[in-house]
Length: 111
Image (cartoon, rainbow, N blue to C red; front, side):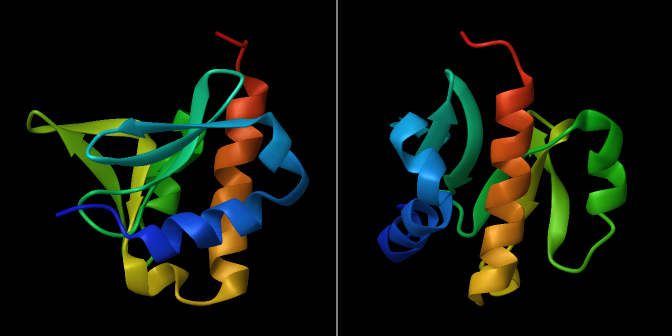
């Protein structure tokens, strides 16, 4: 499944002022948005969003409806969340998740 181009455009809009600091890159079968070389959020090739968050808060965030820890090679990845498309249907929900990803990416040293 290719990533949702409409969702990618909505992410661009949600990035607002951070947009100028963002690089787009195809990753994980989707389109990722990186700040300082660190992934913040992606339109996932599996649908919905892939969001990078603080590993210490990711387990708690994954308890929300339509949110789960990303699984890679059978292993849950703390700090990486999959957010289902229906959980970001509205503007405010998408803004919240994009904001979380941007905040965490900005907290990391640039690559």
